[in-house]
Each structure stands twice: as C-alpha cells, then as structure tokens.
Image 1 (cartoon, rainbow, N blue to C red):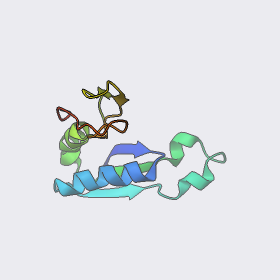
Image 2 (tube, helix red, strand yellow):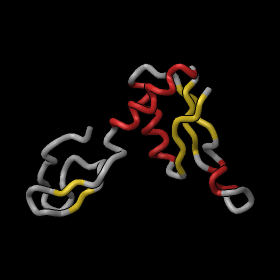
Image 3 (cartoon, one colour):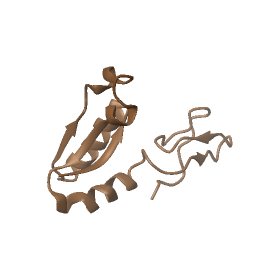
Image 4 (spheres, rainbow, N blue to C red):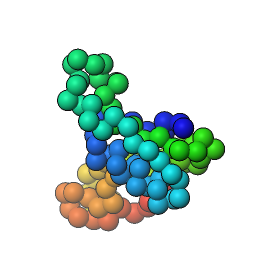
Length: 103
C-alpha cells in the first residue's frame, strides 16, 4: 500500500478518496480521528491519509489527483477580474463561469 494524499482537512481527504474510487482505484483511509491528538503528537502525524491498496495504482492515483480541480493554480475571472481558487468553476463575486477547465 502507498500513501497518495494527506491533509488536515477531512472533507478534502474524503473528496480525494472519492475521486480515486470513481476511477476504480481501491483506497484505504487512515488517521481520521487523530486531529484531536494534535499537540500531543506532531501535526504532520495527525493528518488524514488516503492510501491506494495496490502499489501498481500509485502513479495512476497521482495522475487522477493532479487532474482534479482541487489542485492547480488560481484562475482570473473573465467577467470581473477577481482571482478565484482552483476548486471553483464559477466566480464567487459575479457568478461568471470559468472559461477553461484545469489540466
């Protein structure tokens, strides 16, 4: 098994797992309840983790996560010029749709 993602944000960890499971990559999640131990344990050890069950799926899993809208550069709205984070497909300020999907 190989770890392919970790975050203190449980929602983001579950979202990453969902992306991988949708692509047929078997996963396991670890450390889901360790955030309450932060301070007693090092913060990096308390992150929720997504692991791929089959080692040979590691490269494909990283590819899926890279292509997701969760990662990537911020984008500038063509409607109002506002800078938006990569996970959004619509501008929060004016409602304009993103012109191109992230690669």
